[in-house]
Every structure is written in C-alpha cells, then in structure tokens.
Length: 184
Image (cartoon, rainbow, N blue to C red; front, side, top):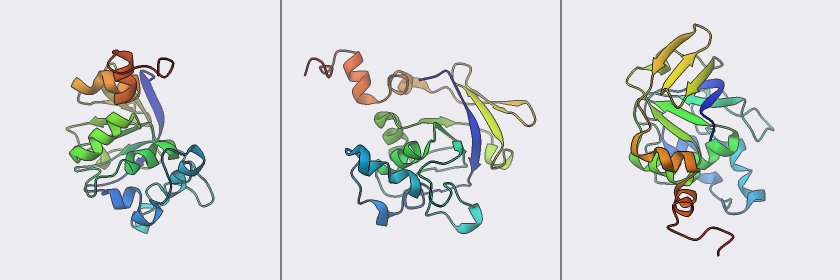
C-alpha cells in the first residue's frame, strides 16, 4: 500500500447505507470470480438519490473518483462485504468520514478493499465533489489541493498492519498464522 493516496473526491453526507453503496438487486455476482465481480464497479453508489450525481458514468465500470469524503455513519445498514468491494472495484482507494458503521469499517479493513479513515472535522462540508485531495497515511493528513489547506485525520491505529498488508488474510500469511499460497 502506498503512503499517499491522491485523486478526485466524491462527497456525500451522513448515513450513507450499504443499499446506497451497492443496491441489493446487484448482489448476484460472485466476489470470488474476477470476471463476474468486475460488474460491481458499475453499480457502486448507484443507490444514491439522483441529486448526488453519478459516481460511475453510464457504460463505465470505473469511477474517476479515488476518494470518498463523507459525514457520519458511513456504511450503515446491512452487513455485506460487497459494499467496500464495490467501491474498490470502481477505483476507490480511501474513504474519509466522521464515523463508520462498525461492520462496514471491519469489512473494508479485513477484506483489504480500501482504507477507511476518520476525521473529527466535517470535511464533507468543505471539500466539493471533483476537488483533488492528497491523503498522507504516515502523517494522517488530508490536503485539499484547491486551497492547499491540510486537515488532520485520526491515525489508522490498531488495524494499520492489516490495512498495509492488504487485508486480514494477507496479514495472517505475513505473520505466519496461516500458510502462504506457495505453502498450501
């Protein structure tokens, strides 16, 4: 995992639920099948109200947005690892929110799908969709490129080793808790 994540931001508010992130009618593809799972990218955030705009352009599988900036309780609702997976497949590298639903947070970390970062500041009221941002994971900061203002993020904390390994299974292999693919 890189120490910096940069890209365009897609901005959301509070209480974005998993049905908005990946609507239930699209949960027909297997995450274990690379050919099938690529379909999730085109449906990422397709459950949002139309006034939020399109996250993935019509006919595309990837989004031009690498970072989501949101308010409180991001990823609430049903427990499904498909939500952070759909965002990753669409090209999201990180989500910066004021708080997360615990199950979304752990699914994002354990699956190695994206980096869930928290902030005390309502960055979703400062950053606008389409603004470029740079996240420095080592310094726990987000730079809003249009203004060059730097905002503090909460340190990743106890899950940092899992995040940097690319998920719980990669971490367990690295630590010798389970055999590596070559040993299996």
